[in-house]
Length: 416
Image (tube, rainbow, N blue to C red; front, side):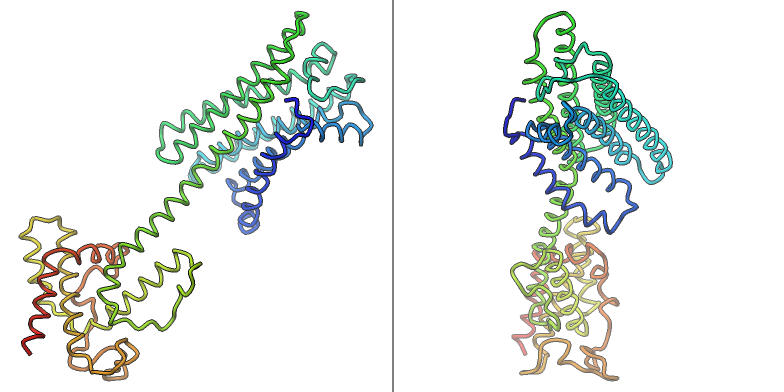
């Protein structure tokens, strides 16, 4: 690509450098994580490719070394390393823990082949002769020069082989997965196909030189553009599964937060928040959910002395008659018993006293357990201690059965 300022290479290279910066702390904490190491190696080599391929960088390298075209073997070495890093990442990424040893063997072979090609590229450059500096068309200008010709063909063959292997591995793996990972593999496969198109254009331009024709535009303009595009597409493919996984986890946490809100509101008067974890607007959703669940458990403990097993059994029978699923029946029964207990707790709490656990001290100094009612909520409710139990109870609060039990408890209160 004839870009005298190198912006077409520096901008994506800088973007990838920022992504690498976000991975370094994790690598520092988990240096033995092979997958994470492979990701960082891939990002590092891709950054090297983008910065080294820029015309200003190549000119600077040639000027500093005093060797015409000294940048060429550096660029070809980094392209070969990048191709090997792609295969390494796919090997580690697609293999589970039970295949770690096999993946390690394949990774060592891939590393050995990549290193051998890089050494050969540099040896061939040293054996050849490139007296005229060529910043954008070295591949075609020296297409017939002994040793340099072999160097160019070697790196292109290595690049093509990596593209074919990568496309095959990604396409095969994509048939076994779904969601963000499948979409990411599709993008990576597209990136490899663009890479193969780059190789076809390069080979065509070189072949044309051998036939004494000038197809240099295929190499200097179109192939270079495809190389940049393929690197960005493949990079997005590697990032997409990780990004989609994080977004899915973030969405699940927010959904859980809003699903728990009805239950939190039901128990709000009975809560006593001793520690406020979610104090600011910048508090993470994980902390918010933890605070909400802590408040809900606090409220359940506060009203647990007023839970009535008979009320739960009655709610269980009514829920069964509505032909609901077994999980919904249990959730409705627990929610109805809890809603009834909240009303009774509100009626019988001492006026002017702290509504939370800290204000209730029963026999033996146990907080929140008035003597005549002292019991644990586990003797009545079944869901609060299950991971998804609170959410199911919260959803069940909107059922007609729960409303009827809440209204019945309030009616009893009004008759007193």
